Length: 250
Image (cartoon, rainbow, N blue to C red):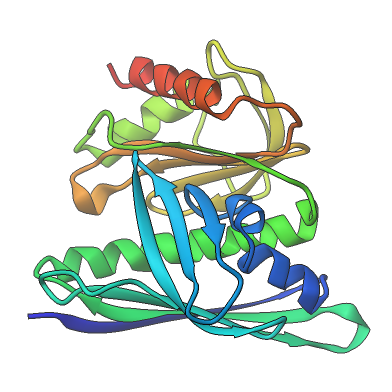
């Protein structure tokens, strides 16, 4: 039996509605803050495609009203699950814009864990949209996604290993300035801009970095970065972060 759900988030950003539209309704824009590598066919009835974890996920565009209203919906799966995303964009005085994100649909047999995972993950992803529009808007990112590797059931142990491997002598706090030193990868100097049960986020001058331990699904670890450096080889960068991740959690 499919279970209905709805999650809603709202932010105000110092960007125009057109800049927000470019971030939510174009492939390069979505690459800069969401998951995978994206393509968006610019019309109602068009298709969105996200290459992620070696497979492609598609959805149908159900609303295309630039720059104020964009929505899409995935096909229904065998257990009745589907996901719908809707963005409502409203310009305000003095150049700011309010963005409302509604994630709704139906979840399948494992709906309780899936809902818990979405309740933890959705705010983090939507906040990356805010970070992108505040600090990086208009810049092209190389998305770096590494998932499906090591599993660490113990949450405290997973974060201890993350902190140690990143050169942190303690668990960081929101707003801390940090220097991360992942072995075999470039040093990262930035600010801790997201902390929650499952995620550690750091923003540098050239990237949005996210480290993940998804406890509700048994403890897989991963990274989901967006690096704003010209000429970066995505495949090689993902391999490098995968080697690092496997080394940390060997």
